[in-house]
Length: 166
Image (tube, rainbow, N blue to C red):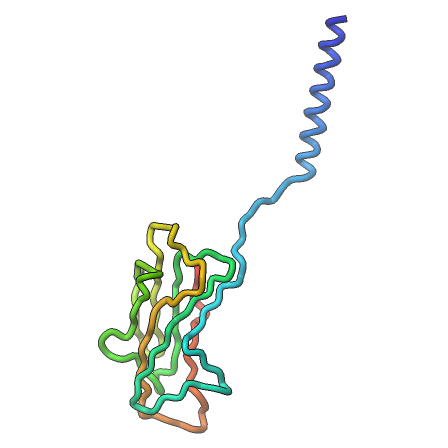
């Protein structure tokens, strides 16, 4: 009797193990974390084709580079700002000011080439300082050149397609 009980218990344990394994294999879980595509880069003051910011030739103006992480946590950003060098230029001296309250490291750049400003910013090694709310990355100051054409419309300043937020 005791021998039959041990054999029967062993068979039941093996069957439960096989059924559990089969169930787990059938219901394989995919646990991956994916960042939502809700990060938005913008400029402040904002401007539209219907209400463009207007600057007199020779005048200077500053644009705040803004980052809205949405539901993501941002630790670094590679930024490319594009503009028409025939109509505007970055000012001499210190045309870019990093918001060091948000991004403690200017990991790369800024690199100024005609029509483009590139740089990479980071929160550094302390990931408790990741960006969770809309934040100013920094400020770029431009000068409007004397070249003015009423037929070409407003000058665009945009983020390049190589800009990345991580």
